[in-house]
Length: 115
Length: 115
DNA sequence: GCGATACGTAACCGATCGGTTACGCTAACG
DNA sequence: CGTTAGCGTAACCGATCGGTTACGTATCGC
Image (tube, rainbow over all chains, first blue to last red; front, side, top):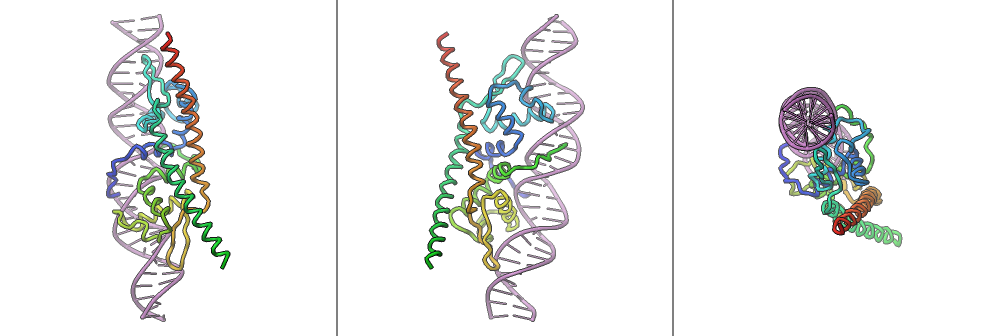
C-alpha cells in the first residue's frame, strides 16, 4: 500500500462497522435492550477485550453509545440514528441507479426482440 | 487472531464491498453506464491491477458483472440486484429496531418528566 | 481502607487488505 | 503471422484488522 490517507467519512465507518458479522450480532443484542459491556459478548467465542474493541468501532460509527452507571457501562443504540440514516440514504440512492439501469436493460432487450 | 473461519455470507461480502470509498466510486461509475475495465479507474490515483482487484470484490459481492466483448470487458450493474436488496432488507430491519428503541426512550423520558 | 469487580487500553501477533511490479494469455490488427 | 492491446493474476510489501494476554484505573462491597 502506498497511501490510504482518505480521511474516512462517517459513511465509511458505519459501513465498515456493519460489514463484520460479529459486530452486527453485537449491535442486534444492544438493539434489543441496553446491555452491560460485559454481557454484550456473552456466549461468543472471544475474550472481553475483543468485544470492547468491537464496541468501540460501533460507538465511533455513531451506532451505539455508552451509558456509564457507576462502575458498569450500559450500551444502547445511539439516540440519534443519523449514522444509519446515512447508510439508508446511500442505499436508496444507488437503488435508484439500479432501477434506471434495469429499465434501460429491459428496453434494450425489447428492442432486440423487435429486430 | 485465533480464528476467523466464519464462512462469509453474501451480506458480509456486499457490505464489505460497499465499505470502501474507492469501490463505491467505481460502483457509481459503472452504475452510470457500462464501462470498459480499463476506463473504470480513469483518473484515480492507482494502477490498473488495483482497479481490477476492486472490480473482483464488487463482482463477487454480486453488485456488478462483466460483459466480455472481444478482448475488452465491459462492466455493468448486475442484472439482478439481489445483493443490494439484501442490504436494503438488513438496514430496514435494524431501522425498525431503532424506531422501537427510540419510542421506548421517548416514553421513558416522558415518564421521567411526570415524576 | 482494601480487596474485588467492571471496564478500557497497551502491546503484541498472525492474517488479511490495498496497493505495487512482473507476468501470461487471448483477441485484434497490420 | 508477428505484434500490440486489453485484461486478469501472481508475487510481494507495508498497514490495518481481529484476536490475544497483561496491565491500569475507577467504583463498589465489606
